[in-house]
Picture 1 (cartoon, rainbow, N blue to C red):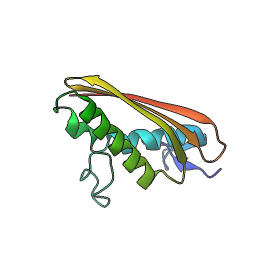
Picture 2 (picture 1 turned 45 degrees about the horizontal axis):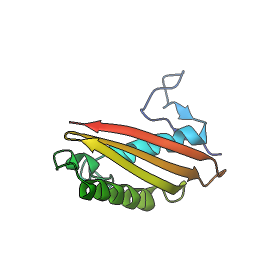
Picture 3 (picture 1 turned 90 degrees about the vertical axis):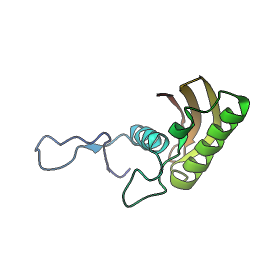
Picture 4 (picture 1 turned 180 degrees about the vertical axis):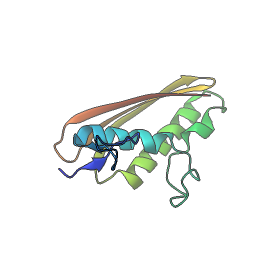
Amino acid sequence: MRKAIRFPFALGASLRSFDQERDHAAYVDQLMRQLLLTRPGERIHRANFGSGIAALLFMPTSRGTAGLVKSLVWRAVDRYLDDYVIIERVAVDGEPGTIRIEVIYRLRADGSERVFREEITQ
């Protein structure tokens, strides 16, 4: 496996380089977190990067909103992480001001199943 920069960024022991993530599964978990918690327009050179889920926090809690969140997750992961993961299932739950997401996926590298859980609040 190739090495990758760890997120959140941290300096290495020499203080001259970024710390590297050697565990591929942990690296993909970090990518998933970055992707789903980033708002489109937040990154300067990648204006479309992100999922846009946080913008839905103020929408009424309904099956329609949950379906929209699922759609945003599928679309973002398919576009940006397709080389790394295969999504098995996306579950969404929440109440006003809170969205809970669970993404079950398989790593393409070794086929292992992983679970990403996040609670997004106001």
